[in-house]
Amino acid sequence: MVLLSFDWFLIIEKAILISIVIVASLVIAMYETWGERKVAAFIQDRIGPDRAGFGGILQPLADGMKLFMKEEIIPNSSNKFLFVMGPGLAMLTAMMTSAVIPWGGHLEIMGRTVPLQIADINIGILYVFGVVSLGVYGVMIGGWASNNKFSLMAALRGASQMISYELAMGLSLIALLMLTGTLSLRTIVEQQSTGHWNIWYQPLGFIIFFVCALAECNRTPFDLPEAESELNFGYHQEYSSMKLGFYLFAEYVNMFISCVIMATLFFGGYDIPFVNDAHLYDQIGNWAALAQVVCLMAKVIFGIFVFMWIRWTVPRFRYDQLMNLGWKGLIPLALANMVITAVVALLKYNNWHF
Amino acid sequence: MNISQILFGILTVLALVSALGVVVSKNPVYSVLCLIVTFFAISGHYILLNAQFLAIVNIIVYAGAIMVLFLFVIMLMNLNAEVEPQKSKILKFAGFIAGLCLFLVIVAALKNADEKTQTQATQLAGGDIGLIKNLGRALFNDYVLPFEISSVLFLSAMVGAVVIGKKE
Image (cartoon, rainbow over all chains, first blue to last red):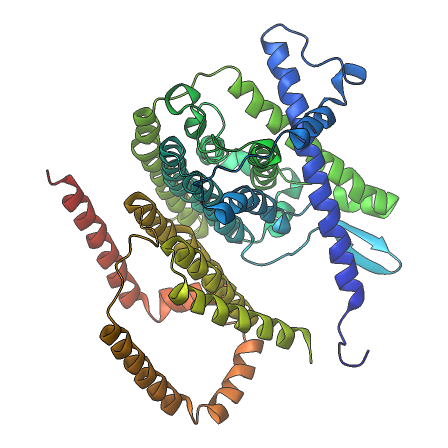
């Protein structure tokens, strides 16, 4: 093949990495549903799913099977193409973010250095924002294509909630980016590898980011788009079978991805705490990279647990409370955080002279 | 034929087809969705030119914010293909002529752009002026006054929107 002369190994390597990442996030999302039911059961003093397999470990498979076996209903007066496209878009935007996340250091395979990251672009975190801002479309298109007033109302609510909280999220990250001085996620992780996690420098920024992440994932206390008491069921009211499953599943994938982003930005990413990672690479080689992946996953699983903990503890906001919190609470707070950080960063740059 | 040429071909076809879709499709929601695909294709071109910041800002601002507002308006007004009034034959003919004139002007303008862009394109593909660091430096050193003036313009537009929205 003279015509197509590019690095085939690179393409194969990336293809394998992408498939591993996608399969892993789907499996983790599957087991998040199981974890959610177990956590809910624990908080409400129940046992939770315990029939399918040991401790209900096969329950997600049974749920998936149930969703696939259900009757597929497409309303007569709906826009059929967009009706099917809605859940697909929701899933696509949920999965796309994983492309810029550094999952670990690098592996040495047959003399090639394989970084455990699909694409290390120098606008990493902006890419995440771009994809997050596209997350609105799945909800809006699905709600509109159902041709149902309740679905449309819920979709508009969901979209305006996501747009409002994106602003505060962006502002809270600007303060962080002033400290790191880079947008590349891998560089941000490497800066934190000395143990100086960004959470120590940006506690307020982290709290704002965390609240906004809850809102972006439509999790309680911000699950207004699916407020069943006011809107029957929400934007996916007309959906059944696996199309409904995709919407619910996309929420869990989003939750996983946002926990990964949080761990990467604020908790040192794949850095193993109290261990010199570079030293570890000299000693055990490729196993160090795997240890880093495991470490990142441990941080992520703790984050997911906090998400679930909040869901089963806090009641849902009213819509006006949600908007007030977003526009009058979080955005001014994030702006203040940004200004203070800018002043301190400038002072530090000038060696503490005014 | 290297990979960026292949990507350029794919992106160009995608941009042209989806741009045609914006004009041709009867349903306004499809038009909006086609426009979003066009923006993505154009962002792809920016990335091929190594202007990553421009590419992602194009997506965040246009596909992520402005198009969402378009979609809001179209969904709430519930425009459908059946309700849209049919335009008269004369109007269609006039539109056709006007389009042809525009096409003629574009052909005339781009006729001898060939030799110029050849050198510029090669410069751009290798250059890193589009990377965020250099862009920020250029904005805040060479163009700081226009940049600040345009930010004041944005602020006044925002205040204006709030004032209009507040009017009972």
